[in-house]
Length: 195
Image (cartoon, rainbow, N blue to C red):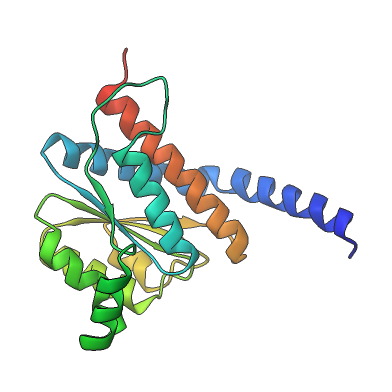
């Protein structure tokens, strides 16, 4: 395949994946928005976790909530934190308590009943993300999964599972950030938009 053809086919595939996600992801995405809005109305915090590209998405989406996404809305910060952004913490945790526990440990120290954890995993099977969801449920923290393919273990473990209907990792990650933006902007509009 030549580069020009690959360029065009990649964009077409990306667009098709987004359109194919409308119906399968609609209900869960709306429920995720409701859960996050309810948490914020009760003084909660939204935590994000994920590995690799999903860690970057976790950081990106936490920033959208903390700073802002829609520049037409003036609002205060919405408490949000990525659990994947502190290298000292991650390496100490990986070394001392095992990498599978790094997100759960931080959630244990920072999370409170009524908060929300957004667990991002293209496979739905990342052990450290699964453990964080398990810990969240033990602590009364609502869980939202941004997942792909079959949804893996996390599809059944999360309170709300948004499962992107593709197995292509690139398309899953593109949809995660698109859905994440929709969620963040919808939360802003619900909490601070004008009628």
